Image (cartoon, rainbow, N blue to C red; front, side, top):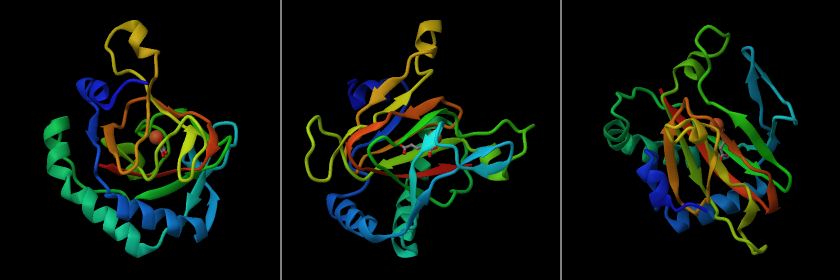
Length: 202
Ligand SMILES: O=C(O)CCC(=O)C(=O)O
Ligand SMILES: [Fe+2]
């Protein structure tokens, strides 16, 4: 799979050690026991579950943990503004996801066309943020998962590149950020469980 440096060269923001291993470990412990419900997606302004487009669990992580993540994300806002050459305002509340075997999130963009019904946040997202709490491995091993690559489309400006999704291999503690109008998908998980935290700057 292409390296993190490859994605950086194509404009993706990568912070490999955004969360330290201790934070990730305690998060994963919390995630074992916290409530989980099917993640939804927005269709014509309504939050719906649709297993054919998104099969993902949404975790109810404690407010204390979320606060720690929010603070860390707000701290990197100036770096993101410089990188994306854009002024950022608010941070949406982070969402926590668990992908079990077979779970995925089909091709989508995080920003909604302003003419369609939807929340103010969803229409104004500028930068998408994804944090990986655990990493990938070819063979099953504790705390890793197989499959579950994040494929990013439209990174190359030529016609062929537009239709190709470069797969990014998640690593524990890594944060990646990209413009919210980029098409992307999460490939099905083939073993283990994949944990991410997702948020957006508007
Ligand atoms: O979990 C991920 O890696 C990405 C999820 C995503 O694209 C989203 O929540 O919009
Ligand atoms: Fe997304």
